[in-house]
Length: 418
Image 1 (tube, rainbow, N blue to C red):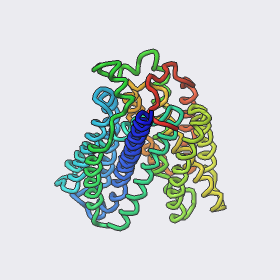
Image 2: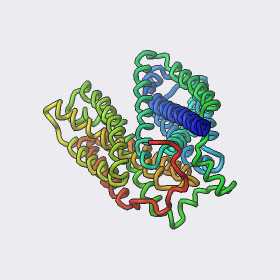
Image 3: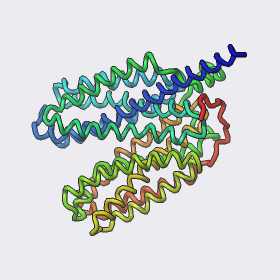
Image 4: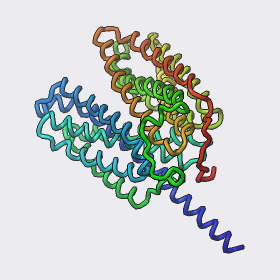
């Protein structure tokens, strides 16, 4: 009896250790993505000021767009591969790809090569988030998957803050930012190779389905089509809001008549709200249901965005509204990912999450473009916020169409305790 108890305790300890490594390594991987997706914006002013490789503003826009295109394509492609080959292998491979091509970026000898390297790095980068979210969710009981998704995404904002702080220190030596990211990425991949376990849910699903390929068309079958369309639309609208606001909020605030320091400060306040919203949103969703919480979050986002269209005389009131805009907008998007991890079975979960992320990335490209056109037309304020409010309404309607619960019960048992 004592021997059996000791064996059980030993197994639980080993499992806890594996789960801890999964949480840490997936969070750090998402942190690297947050770092990378902000780094280009942080150095563009320097690249243009120094005329690096003869780069123009139009070149910089093309490079930024291609980076996002690479991320979108990588997110879509990785899903079926992760469901066929495994989460662990795909995550490590993705980190290696974006680390390698990130280190090469400062060595580019032309604008074309610079853009190509960013595109390929984006392919690896885009694969990281959906696989990380999938692994985190599969190492949590079903009742804690919303928190798994939202807490993982706090790494994204942490990476963005680190990039901003480092960019202030290195000034014209922007190459250092890419070298740091590439080296750290390789170190993370090495630790993942030795410490990151495969998802037990994937292993169980593989034993049932064998070596069956998981094409994207699996998501178009009647059993999943309704959820798929709702998730894709909600993800598109959510990432449109996230990227549109992060790109243009300071300019929209300045156009509204707020001084530049106040306008720039709002970006920090917005992202602080985003971190709080991620923690709060995951906790509420696990207790009250992911769909209902996502509806409430998108609804609150509509209200906050509409309020921002009104000029406020009180800095405290402005900061409060911007803070709560971040609370609801950023976590509303991530709750869509959480829904995917709970609704879809392990056999196609990676494919579903990759498609949601990839299609959502199209919104991340379109959002800043439309908002930029409104700013160029001289109507950024208030029409930029009207536009964002309408997008949040569309996101809410998309979530409304989602099935509340999965008709396809989870095949895998939770692999962890509470």
